[in-house]
Length: 370
Image: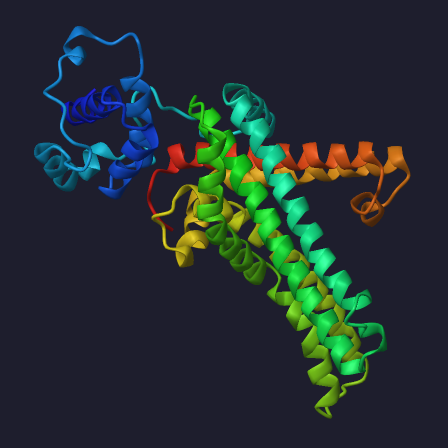
């Protein structure tokens, strides 16, 4: 292990011995442009009980807000040696080049086991917050529609305004709830994958702090994935109302656009599926670059993982539909507790598999950009 890494381990150990929280030390190092994978590896080494004698010797502790001068200088001038690339990782940080779906699921269970307390509380807390916020929104809308304001007897324009506003509120709530559940559960799983036991307070706090980035990443992903749908909706209308009806040619255009939409949505999925996780786990990456970062991470191996994962998930949904006798919309809107519990567990496992994929691809591909 090189001298710079030893200094990094010594620095972390000094401040841990001072009682400074791990997260504070981690944030300070990341703000000084230390590579996150290297920092994680250094924390594992610093907290390991089996260290060589020379590693036990360290200079006098320094305040957290003062990085050792030589450590900063070496970090600034020797980044290529410190940061793992696609062909270079710290000696104990390895990852398979061809990551398999069932391996990801097994790693997900292992990560949950390593950080079970924070994970269970994160799931309960995030779903509870989502449910409470939905109840409050529904209560306010119900008061407007049926309460003392008497909108049932109001003008049509006023009623439409409330209905349109309600649609916006529900959309915003869904975006927040989905992003918040993803953020908190993913943070707990990721900490477990690094063999860290995080506190529920820190997990929820980070989830709130980064939920905005996850929402924006989801919006960017949706926009770039479903733009052909806009063509399907508006282009035939423009074509038919422009006076160039073209007879049957306009009817042929719609199925062609539908095929384009399906193909492009699938291509976007295998390119940009990790965008929300980049936004969550790499706060230093500008939000406008998360799609490019996702594309880079998924190249040369990650896309095939998503292809197999997609068909496996589709097979599970088909089997569930056959067993229950319900189609997909009926499954999504079912009031059956068993079905809903199964869907929640399935969504958590899918999310966990994507976290593990991100973790794997970050080690394999490194910190480069597309």
